Amino acid sequence: MNNKTISSALISVFSKDGLEPIVKKLNDLNVTIYSTGGTEKFIEDLGIDVVPVEDVTSYPSILGGRVKTLHPKVFGGILNRQNHDGDVAELKEFDIPQIDVVIVDLYPFEKTVASGASNQDIIEKIDIGGISLIRAAAKNYADVTCVSSVDDYAEFLDLLETKNGETSEEDRKQFAAKAFNVSSHYDSAIFNYFNQNHEIPSLKISENKGKVLRYGENPHQKGFFFGDFDEIFTKLHGKELSYNNLLDVDAAVNLMLEFKNDAPTFAVLKHNNACGLAQRDTLHQAYLDALAGDPVSAFGGVLISNTEIDVATAEEIHKLFCEVVIAPSFSDEALEILKGKKNRILLILKDIDMPQTNVRSCLNGILVQDRNNITDTLEGLKPVTKTTATSNELDDLIFASKICKHTKSNTIVLAKNKQLCASGTGQTSRVDALNQAIHKAQSFNFDLKGAVMASDAFFPFPDCVEIANNAGITAVIQPGGSIKDQLSIDYCNENNVAMVMTGTRHFKH
Image (cartoon, rainbow, N blue to C red; front, side):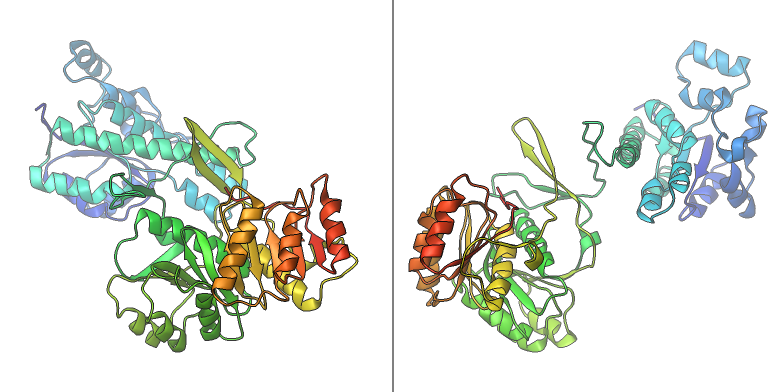
């Protein structure tokens, strides 16, 4: 079993929260406590004896506290092998105390970066002594227990109380694993701060918050989510989110961010694509018109609003079976209505910035790209036809383009009066995408006369604009860039169709 009874502990922490009961318990167990600086004073103020590390090293804290514990007598006490005769002899020869427990909580580097602090303040929060103590103690888990974070204080206290100061090798190995998790995450955060522009072609991803999901995309696949869900959402109600829920929620949030601070906008998503979206003077009407885009696909979908959900909207939503409802807020009455179905997941979307890097697995590696931060605007449109788009058509073109940007390629989006009429999604041919969209719009009784069309990429031939024109579409938005752009422009000129180009492709694979 290789059990060890704790007789000495070195404590050097940033956060003192939860430390007091540990110190008191160690004192009750007659454990000799070594400490430095602010932690030393904290322990003294509790009326508990503490040995200053300076008394062990015969060397003061120097360089404004940058060097306190970096000394052979400290690290010798941690790294010695208690079953090694040579190590035991050297401890005695050089008067080095045995250290059985190391308790460290590192300087808050990530929090300092997130606070917008100056570079100098951030650099000062790179812990040197603490990270060294962690690595040493964790390496020597055969003899030493390493408590590496305030998050582990409670677990360590429980261990002290239940085992009366005795630890097994398995206990120490588990704390060592936690310690290397802390140290690797800490170093990753520091590297990413220094490599913000990716000058060094190396990827460091570290997430300390992980959750086991019920399963992955399908029941026979394991699934996990690594990330801080609570940083983005406040969950108000409902069952646990699944792997597929999370993918749909991600798609919904990124889409609705295009309409942040706009008039009331509501979207319904299914399988990562919008099947309904509308913008109106009231959220209630926006929801009804979004639902009308495809009331069949809306069943079991994810719903999202850019403004508070009120009673009238909640009453309509409550008639629909849906998995998730997301909004910046819910009125009290709306919340009570929507809680009427116990499994319905209700999320408040916080006002935060989404990550600026997209990451996904590919083959035996990882693909990384910048977030697509370009949103087409009226100012950026380039008219290329004799027929110019009307003011309403221009508004609809931008509206359709925003949806198109967040729809799986190849895609065509048809819109009219700031309502999604239909999309053709994930097709191998742009003509197929257009035909799919037209068929779907007509099946739900949309009149496409005067509607607009958005394409996520250029038209290599005039076939799409011809099909669209025959369906009643009067204005088109596309990035342009084909060597045969003029063919589509010529067709539009001959048939009084307005076309604008953006110069920006929005593939979403």
